[in-house]
Amino acid sequence: MNSKIFSVAMAAAFCAFNATAQQAPTADQVVSALEKLSGVHPGERRNHIIGICVGGSFVGSKDAQAFTRSALFSGAAIPVIGRFSLAGGNPKAPDATKNPRGLALQFNLPGNSLQHFTMLNVPVFGAATPQTFYAALLSNMPDPATGKPDPEKQKQFRATHPDAKPLGEFMAKNNPPVSYANSDFFSVHTFKFVNANNQTTLVRWHFVPEDGVKRLTDAEMGTMPARFLDEDLIAKTKKGPVRWNMMLTIGEASDVQNNPTIYWPAERKTLQAGVLTLTSATPQKGADCEKINFDPLVMAEGMAPTDDPVLLFRSPAYAASFVKRLTGN
Image 1 (cartoon, rainbow, N blue to C red):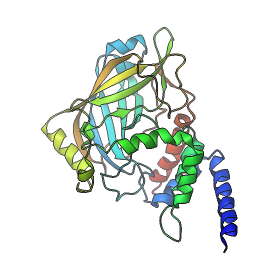
Image 2 (image 1 turned 135 degrees about the vertical axis):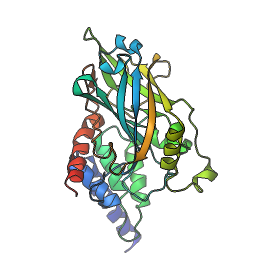
Image 3 (image 1 turned 180 degrees about the vertical axis):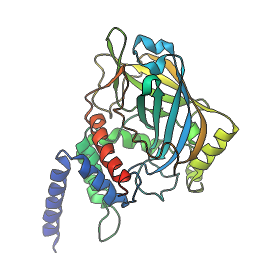
Image 4 (image 1 turned 90 degrees about the vertical axis):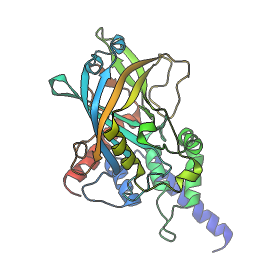
């Protein structure tokens, strides 16, 4: 094939790729793409497959009651079931992999009410829309000839999806944490707090580790054991409680609320909204967190979602994956 014909063929392939990627995907399409990337592991999550269960409590600050009537901020200790995880669907990925970590929490509120937080240890998401997220998955599909992603498709994705750039820049500058206990976690999305007077406030939050944020050096990334994160957290919680401070950022009407790839201005008001204390960590198999579907749209009175398309898409996508897990597929 001469170079001109090859160039035309490549251009046509890119056009077909982009056309597919720009169509609004269904939850099943996204889950299927995750399966194609990492294989199907029956009964397991399609994303964030590697994880560890944790338990403890959360005590919310009454200062947050000015913004929300949620029982989460009553000042009482709220039981918590949580799960730390590594992004991706490969069960053999080492803990030093340079990708996001997750922290999902289920707060068991009075009256059998539930509140979920699903956070990442990055301040922004990698897509402003489900279309971009789906396009990213397609661009990383292995080439049948090489078994590896096509660099040209990845380059084309970056060129046509600027909303993926902020996360890429953050990941390039920040190595993974030395421990889950030394990682911070962000809401990523914007949410609405609703107070006793039905006043609505835009908020984002950030869980800051009491022991500080600490990252692996470049040299350490190549020498750490495969499952050092789990082993470390189990050992730490056996010695004593591990804590994070929940820092709440108060948004203004002009702030972007429906795009998780955009940072808010640094001068926004913040307050300490509570303390998360974890007292146990156990392998996820058979533990309390294993069967929980940490849907970020599970919200109790006093909280509400924004119209962020990625936030709203996560619920059906999680549900599609959850059904497959429950049925052993």
